[in-house]
Length: 335
Image (cartoon, rainbow, N blue to C red; front, side, top):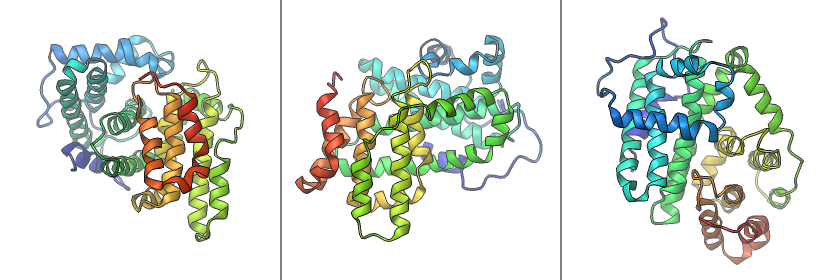
């Protein structure tokens, strides 16, 4: 079932988005349906600053600014404030299981407010607005991925439908990011983004995905489809390689969350058809999730996906699923 937030998200990141005719105040407090802040909202905002900011590497952005400048930049964008509170509520729904439903409902509601505010603002990307827009896109991507991975429906088929929908919504984030990349590089964010990009390529080259590449080479599919698979696998291997970079150099979650954003959209369409090779690729991504299963954003989702793909494809695919299966056996799951 498509939620109101998902409909708003599709409107927020269309394939083409017109820039605002004039620069508007991103904190438009007259937007319909946006409630005033209360003590609960302050609790959520404080939880993000004190607990989540450091764990997701946002402290590196904060290092470029004073605390007041950073807070001021966040508060200037109502859509970002609401998404920060939504993400905090999502975290609390996991670490406070006795109030899981309450916090999860709040997370969904606040995300809807965030998307409504973003749509009504008509933000024009400038050097002033790029920081709140970058933070909004980054947090929204993590929120979407975590929500689909941790709060799963009853069946694997339903999970795939939800996950595919999430991947398609990630496309819009990629469009916005790619179009604004040059402005971001010329902004105060530039050194951070360039440093992250270099660190991403600093990991030792691995061969975890060699079986997948061999599978693609052995297929009788048309060249364009095989090229889509190779691109998807190469992006995945890069994310796995980045896991070998010391955590002080690169936050592990960045490369993982970036994979759904940068993969070719055609792969998502093929996954929607339940093509076996696309599920095998998904199992390798799931193995990467399992390596980082202690992160609350992923939890036991990696193991769940690998086991489900095995069951869906059957014993004849064991050869091609060797690394994911070894990973969930060798990396002890303490979730």
